Length: 277
Image (cartoon, rainbow, N blue to C red):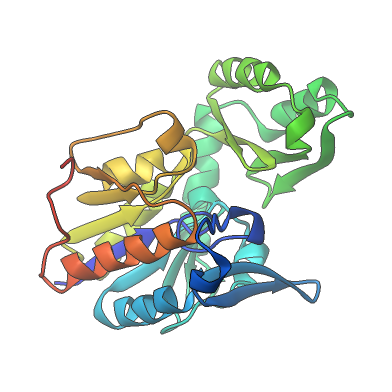
């Protein structure tokens, strides 16, 4: 029976230059591999060691990139290793199979959203009206499923984010602040539901997951074993669970550590202390 590995990408396995957290002397910094180019500029990286680990993982398990990115944003990432058969995009709104969104899955998701939470148009209108132009740089809608703002973080009023979270909660939505982006996402739109569907299709009897943000919490709780790095929303709030291992590693080296942990379990060699140790 295969092992399914569903991992978040940004700030879990891949890192922007601003998120690398290279605190060691320059001469001891790890060699980096660029895995994303956008508008002719390098955008995301992993260590060369992590690239080798991911290649090994892709050969040994069902590796499923699991991201809040839209399909278009995901498709500009060039991960090392075998091309994944499955990928989860738009926080579970699209289940990609051989690079194409599964229409039946997407129809199920959109029906569930229509039934269980306030419409996207209402949330989008509130963001346009309530967000301060002083710190908002962009308003975006992702795959007609959720909305997000790109902000100047140093100017952002974080009390406003808390107020937005309360407003959204009452309408069946959740709010997540990640770097320079504030996401408003319908609660029924989850990575975990898509992961369970891939597990069903592949017959996986063991699921592993990793992530750093509030939008990854459901994925980590749904997996048999989960890992989070020492940075991000989940680390900041002390998020924990019996099946979750909180790693101390931060930045791009956390991505390398997470891949080692995945491979240790997949190869049956264990991954150090049990979760929670």
